[in-house]
Image (tube, rainbow, N blue to C red; front, side):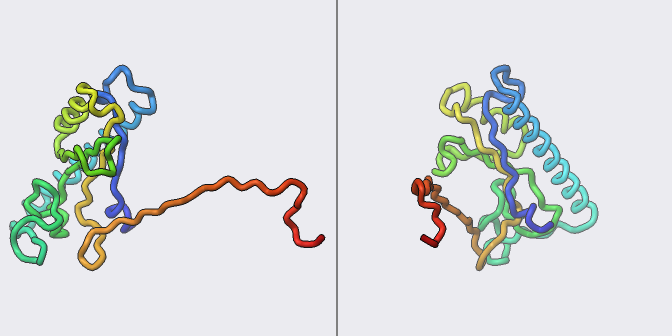
Length: 174
C-alpha cells in the first residue's frame, strides 16, 4: 500500500462545473468523482492539521538541503512544509492543466479550495479557450525521488498491423 501516495489522483473535467446542463452522464460522473475525492482529501488534510496542532510543536519546514526555508519541491502555498513527511503537513493542493495543452506546461494553475477550482474551469470554458476541459491532479505531497530528484517514466508503444501471407500457414515444414 505504498504506491497510492506516489500515484497522482487524476480526473478530466469539462464544462462550467458539475451542474452544467450540457454535460453527458459520463462527464457528470467524472465531476462527481472529482468532487468526492477533493472533499475526502480536504477532510484528511484538516484532520492531519488538527492532530498536529494538538500533539506536536510547530517545526520549521524542510528545505532543499534539509535546512530551513521553503522551496525545493514543496507544494505551492505551503512554505515548504509538505516535504517534511509529517502527516500534519498534508495539504489539499490540486494542479489544473488545460487538457489540450497538458503536456506543454502552458496554462497550468494550482488551487486548494473548491470555489477556486470551479472558477478556473468555468473561466476557461466560458471564454472558449479550453473546450477540452482540464486534467486535474492531486499534488503529490511526498513524491518518489531518485537520487533526490523527481522523475517520470514514459512508455511509448508502436502498434503495427500484422497480416500473415495468404496460404502460407507460417509453420516450418514444407
